[in-house]
Amino acid sequence: MFGFVIGLALSLVYGWVLDPRPLPIGPADLRLAHKEVYLRLIAAAFFHERDEERAQARLASLEQPEVGQLLVHVTERYIAEERDPRDIIAFVTLADALGLTTRPMVAFLATPTPTPTSTPTLAPTPTPRPTQTPTPATLIPTATSTRRPTLTPTPTLTPTRRPTRTPTPTPTPTVGPDSPFGVAQSVVLCDETNGGLLRIYVRDRLGVGVPGVEIMVSWAGGEDRLFTGFKPDVDPGYADFQMAPDERYQIKLVSVAAEGAVPEVSLSGDILCANLPAGIDPSWQIVFEQGVSR
Image (cartoon, rainbow, N blue to C red):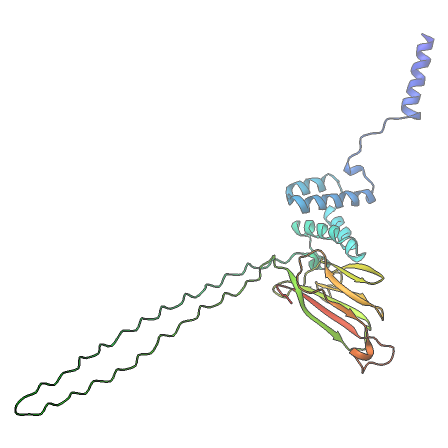
């Protein structure tokens, strides 16, 4: 009996003090940093499922007072710190669905574009077939005993106009929401500010800047990737890159379909902008637009 009591006491000490079983933990028991991670998972799931009721249930499981303000705070911090655009877009999509959109988020909201109406093709107007003018028969004079025969002149045929063929109108191709992007402009800027800056704009078929587009800038020594949308005060579809002299750069759109020649730019101040002061490099501006092909 004494040994049983000693064994029971030792097992209780081991189970309660030395190696206690961990208690079950739910989302509400997470630390604040871990709640932000869980919030990112909720936003990513909503971006793919678009199930607002399930997203609200998951947010409620955090048992966080003012969980909407926490979502806004985390989203704006991700935007300010230029985090992964995929996480930012997921956060912004969830906040917009809950009616919590703020000004910094607007640049990352997808702008719906109206579906263009198809232009009816004009049917060619049938041209009336020309009617043939009958030729009157020529009278043959008859000899009489009293008069000399008189010849009746043959009437002259009236020329009939040949019908002109009505040309069939050529249908104009319609630029749709899935049309590829092309280079609409590639021009050197001879200004003394922001020397050597590569300015890139990405616009949809209506000329509206498109945020969140991945761009690859490559040169002989390497490459760099950047995204539009981090400078909405300039343009939602704007991104820039600082170029170096004596380098040739290629610019490609990665996350959207593109067609046409890949633009190449380089800095050569003496040739491009002879009027710039010494030591000041020119800048380049490249505009990609949906539906443009060169």
